[in-house]
Amino acid sequence: MSNMLPSILNGHAMNEHTPLEAQVITVTSGKGGVGKTTLTANVGIALAQLGRKVVVVDSDIGLRNLDLVMGLEHRIVYDIVDYVEGRCRLRQALIRDKRVAELFLLPAAQTRDKTAVNPQQMIQVCDELRKEFEFILIDSPAGIEQGFQNALAPADLVLVVINPEVSSVRDADRVIGLAESQGKTQIYLVINRVVPARVKRQEMLSVEDIKEVLSTEIIGIVPEDDAILSASNRGMPVVCNGKGPAALAYRDIARRLSGEHVPLEIPQALGWWQRLFGKAS
Amino acid sequence: MIAIKGYRHGLLIVFNDAAQTPWFAHLRELEAKLDATPHFFRGSSVAFDVKDATLDEEDLRRAIDVLRTREIKLWAVISQNAETCARVRSLGLADRLTTTVAARCTPEQPAHLSEGARNSPSPSGEGGDGLFVRRRIRSGQILRHPGHIVIMGDVNPGAQIIAGGDIIVWGRLNGAVHAGALGNPKAVVCALEMSPTCVRIAEAVYIPRTLERGQRKKRAAQIALLKEQEIIFAPWDVLTHTLK
Image (cartoon, rainbow over all chains, first blue to last red; front, side, top):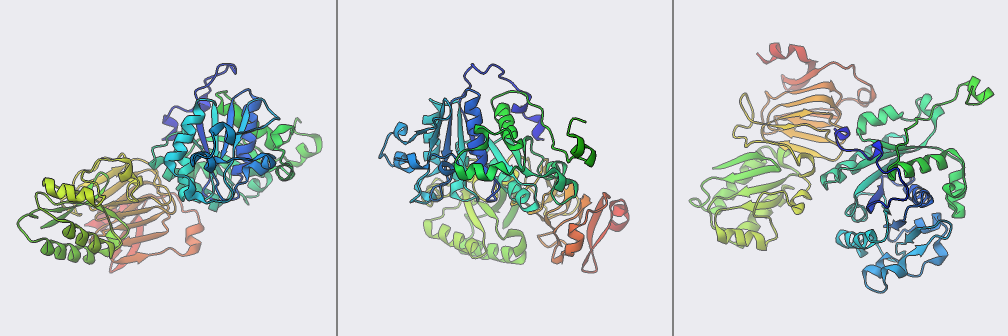
């Protein structure tokens, strides 16, 4: 039924100099450890590289990570809770990422918990950010409790990140159901950490298997990439300078989000012939 | 006289002559009704229609307690009596059955936001009204209706379907279902692809062995029904024979 809705994947705004109407995108998954934070950081940077005005928001209050992955940890002075409780202006809490033109981070507080902010306040924060930015990316905490509700409340578009395995898909199903019941209609799937060879050996779910259970449109398929781990540890996300398969996939997701039509490629395992003579043959 | 109806957004319990009978008598009747088929109600959130009865705060609190001990949540009370409505609001309950955001947040709401269901006077059997749902039922969502339930779409693992009457799934059934949950052993479950995690019909339970659950069933429509207190499965095409 989701294909009856107008899809952003058909492409609309080709001209990168036309400013887009502000869009709040919540990155969520239900299950932890599937790559939400890495995706938020990379897609945020990739969107900024496309010339968009972007802010990434860490809503994982008490367990903040996005600043680490982006390498901005040492520059935090104020955070989202300071702003909500009136200790600073929004501008003061925003940290500029100097690697790209228009990219900011709104960090979470590390000392508090999820109850420090409520959904209504998240909506207000995002409404404030809408005035300045084209893309507001919210990194949601794992789970379906208040932290998730906070992240979901202001969303215009929901990106559900999954790994090709049964428990991740089951949690995503629950999250999609909850998002639908909050009236969200723009829900897209990112399949993360795909290893084509393992899909072929049926150790991992295939894209077809996942479509069958979730019937949600797929906006990106990110292959497993060794570069991710070291990039996250160094605070230098792969899209900054990487040309690996994951970096390419993140850039494609960013292009689709900003309205370009980029066909979705399902990564295939290479046969022995292709491995010997390269993919082209 | 208490009637249980399926409303567009869940269950509605109607107290038909609420003003003429003392409230405690109503509650006793309600308790009996809830305890007769606890499976049907457990975990649900319900609304009351108390017609023109005048209820004070104590009356309402007692009703909430009766429900709470049975793991049922009262989310709304509708009434033609202005005094009762005011009490209802002061207790933080809804006094109308519109889908406000608050109402949607009750656990019952997610699965049936946009479906049309009419009131269902007869719990099951031929001619009983039903709930028609055209969507996928996802993990964690519950569909509950005193009549029949027809679903055009798949029922995912982790979803629950509870009907007073029959359950028909025009799609894959991978969740848990309870047909005849108001005590009707003649109720049936049908699905184009039958691979549920649990099937209940009236009091009977069938839980597939883990092995069967993992296996991919052949895509043949099946019917589950109760025969000598045991749930059996048969190809759907024998439906007409078995029901005679």
